[in-house]
Image 1 (spheres, one colour):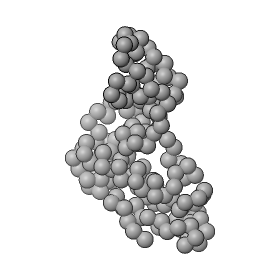
Image 2 (image 1 turned 135 degrees about the horizontal axis):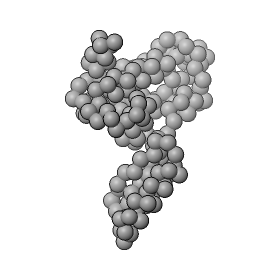
Image 3 (image 1 turned 120 degrees about the vertical axis):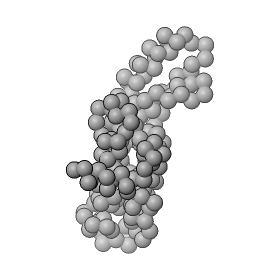
Image 4 (image 1 turned 180 degrees about the vertical axis):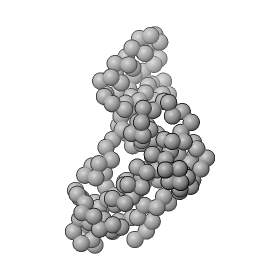
Length: 167
């Protein structure tokens, strides 16, 4: 077994595990193909988000930790384009209206991201145990940690320790 850069343990293939259990904590895990997810890593990921929320400079931009988590996951590339709006040859007020309607139609957590001459409306994908395999979650977790470390200028391990000392 290997460890990811952020403390996540890479799970062995399902065939190497005793049923669908976490290789770290032996919890029963729902598995749909791939390798089982680590409950310990999942909990650590949410602890990192919680600690980052407390330190986030633009904290008032997010209602809660969940808003920040969805934003970070989108910034890490874990989302889907639900609309693409061309911005060339269109009046600004019409573009704003179209973008607002596209965001509203996309639902919660959709964000507009400029891409060349277009505006993409993106929505985060689920990280539910049955929707995201272990290795994919490890990559996302590492990418989110990189974003947090770059924005806050502190390693996530230090961030978690600091947050735990405050509580």
